[in-house]
Amino acid sequence: MERLVTVAVVDGNPGARRGLVRRLEQMRGISVVGQAADLDGALGMVSERRPEVIVMDLRRIAPDGAESLGRLEGAAPRVGIVIFTAYVTEQERADLTRAGARAILLKEIDSEALARAIRAVARPT
Image (cartoon, rainbow, N blue to C red; front, side):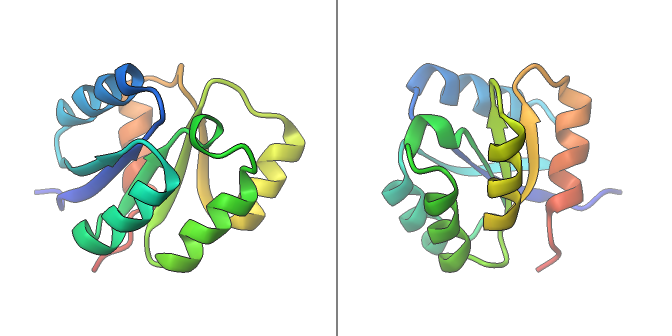
């Protein structure tokens, strides 16, 4: 039996956030433990709910991208961060990876590949 991975979703668009939560809730072995609309909400949620993985659309919540990701990584270094975005440039990919993103995925990814990526970045507690 596979281990349950706890996930939090961060997206500034309420409809997109709800849609992603519903998508994740359909995946075996993944439990959504929280959601937030912005970086401050994410920081509070991480300390309270302690998810193993955060799936976030950084573009919608933080115009400074990698800098905000660095703040989140600094506050929760054991949390695996997956950037879930509609598009990303090579420079953004490099900056986000340096700032702590463990995976950068396009929103068009199929659910099976998304679940594999989430499990890959999860760290056992």
